[in-house]
Each structure stands twice: as C-alpha cells, then as structure tokens.
Image (cartoon, rainbow, N blue to C red; front, side, top):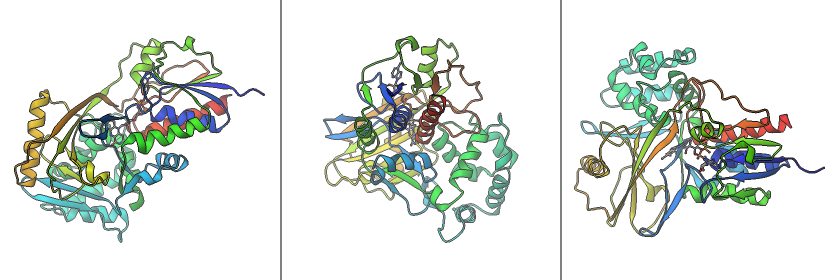
Length: 408
Ligand SMILES: Cc1cc2nc3c(=O)[nH]c(=O)nc-3n(C[C@H](O)[C@H](O)[C@H](O)COP(=O)(O)OP(=O)(O)OC[C@H]3O[C@@H](n4cnc5c(N)ncnc54)[C@H](O)[C@@H]3O)c2cc1C
C-alpha cells in the first residue's frame, strides 16, 4: 500500500521533531520551511569576521527536559550536551560579590535546595520558611494567578525573590513575575526540583546548528523526508496531503488560518562580545543581580574553544528597555567591569541580537479550531503547561506526530 503523505509546516525544533517521528513511523513526509535553513529560533549563523558559528542566543536546559534528551539520544547528539554535576547557580551582586546557590548532592534535592538558600549571604530562617511555604503551595495554584501574587501570598522575603525566584522566573519563562503565570512556574519548579538529576543545568558544547539541527536534519534525510526550504505556506489549500502538522510560530499559524487574534510574545536580547585578550571569569554561566543583563555566558568556555578570540554573551530576558543598541552595549560592558573589578579592553567585535518574538507567553487561550486532518504543534503554552522552551517544542512535535498516527 502506498504510504500516506503528511505535510509538516515549519522547520524549527517542533517541526523537525514531528517530521522525524512521522517518517520513523513509515509515512512519506514533506517538510516545508520558509527560511533558507532549518532550525527556526535555534539557528546559528556563520560570522566570517570572528570565524565562528554563532547562535542566535545560547540555549540552556535542565535535566528535566526528558523529551529533548530522548530526541537527542535518538539522533545521536547526546555528546553535544554538557551537564553540571549537581545544580549550581553562580550569582553576583554589587554588595555581596560572587556567591553560589549550590544544592549538596548528598542531601535529598528539596532539602539540599532549602539548605543552599539558607547558606546564601544575608539569608536567614525567613527564607527557609518561605521556601517551605512555596513547596507546600505548589500544587494548588489557580490558572489566573501571577508569580508575583503567589510570592505575596507566601510572603516571600525580598532577598529570596531577588536572589532566586525572580532570576528563575525570567530565565525559564522569559517574563517578569508581575505577569508570569504561577501555575506554569509551579510546574517548572516541581519538575526541575524533583531530583538532583532533573535540577542540574546543561548547555550545548557546539553551536546549535551542529549540536541540534544537523543531527536532526541528517536523520530526516536518511528517512527520506522531503525538505523544502525557502517555501512559505500561505494557505492550507496549497497542501494536498492526507494530514498536515502546523509547527510554525503561533502568530504565523493564525495568519495562515485567517485568525485575527494576536499572540502575546516576549523579547530576548543577546549581546555577543568578542575580545582579543582573554577575560578571566569565575564561572562559565554567571548570574548577575541588579544589572541590565541577567546572565553572562562564557561561550568560548562552553564550547571548549582554545585560542582565538574570547566570546562572551550577555542575555537580557524579557528586555523591555527602550534603550538604543549603543546604550545597552555600554551598560552591559559597564556591568561586567563592575563585576570583575577591572576595566575591559575594547571588544574586537560586538553583535547585538534582539529577537522580538523570542517566546510566546503562557496565557489561557482557547485552542485554535482546525480542520480534522490538521494538527497543531505551534508554541502556545497554556496555564499549567511548560513555558516556551526547546522541551515544549519537542513535546509539541511528538504529540502532533502521535495524533496523526492515531487519526490516520
Ligand atoms: C534568543 C533565544 C534564546 C532562547 N533560549 C532558550 C533556552 O535557553 N532554553 C530553551 O529551552 N529555549 C530557549 N529559547 C526558546 C526556543 O528556542 C523556542 O521555544 C523553540 O526553538 C521553538 O521552536 P518551534 O519549532 O516551536 O518554533 P520556531 O523555532 O520558531 O520554528 C518555526 C519555523 O516555522 C517557519 N515558518 C514560519 N511561517 C512559515 C510558513 N508560512 N511556511 C513555512 N515555514 C514557516 C519559521 O521560519 C521557523 O523556522 C530561546 C529562544 C530564543 C529566540
């Protein structure tokens, strides 16, 4: 019997995952991607001036990314991820200098975390009590509550919020606590802090184009997926397939379906800096408190690059400043100087990447009505679901592929 033909629209992580799983199941898959290359938001580009493949923005993961890890294993790419041995958040603020939130691996993870918080400079039993209140109120958040309202409810001390909860909220949800959804944040905390294995942070040791996109694309080719780049699908009528998976950004899906409703998205700004002289950083992933950027990544160290220019990247999550590029670059350079207590040499190169629609925000929205043969893998997280991450993209792709298999 002739294999059924499935169209996948969008060649980001969600679309590539759906195409991979469908092709594995024996379907004939056409994958349509509007851009000249696969990858979507996990894209890298070659910068000849620094002779380096540069990610749009460095992507971090946690051990609780089960679906992503399974996918990376299936496409033989697990070697491109490095892991902390146990959770450590290296932080800095102007008043206290450098300090670590480090979960001792010999204690059960929740005890280790509370103990780690207690040992942070200028924390006391009030932080411990708030952590306990946080733990016992995790499971009954209502759909509309914001993280800020939850923190007020448990009377979280300002220090605890500033040192940990605000940083985590911005990092994983890319949204300030004042509007971020508490039910989703609770899910992230509950899954990440359910074991040491889940809590630790991971990072790619190669640019995303090599670590994630190429291994997936290689498998797609082996499975004879027909990849059509530079092909933007503007109408479902253009697709004469037995089933269709939509895996494009939600605003593009709405445009395709003629839905007027807007999709709430949030910005991430990445400032990439290259230096000729080596800059000694105490940590590869440095959390910065009370500064413009929240994280400083030593990309050269993450990628184990030897010699050449040193590549640093400052991440500004939920960047709502109205500052110009030049102002923001000056501000983050000033922050790094303040943190390291030295004056930096002039960077050889600076690249400012502001991704306006970096993530779709978690909102309570009705699911989009679709024709029977069309399945949705677009990023549109609901309250109580995972936020917009690689993990959500992989899960959405897998889920849509499974639905197609059941439907056909
Ligand atoms: C700067 C930045 C940093 C991030 N950091 C992290 C992180 O640290 N950890 C983490 O887990 N996540 C992170 N994310 C989020 C993560 O990258 C995304 O959630 C994920 O990649 C979304 O994948 P997707 O496949 O759903 O969408 P996309 O990657 O947006 O893919 C959709 C694809 O559809 C294509 N398309 C659109 N319209 C059409 C059309 N009409 N026809 C055909 N193709 C179309 C687009 O070109 C695109 O390639 C970050 C994102 C950004 C931007």
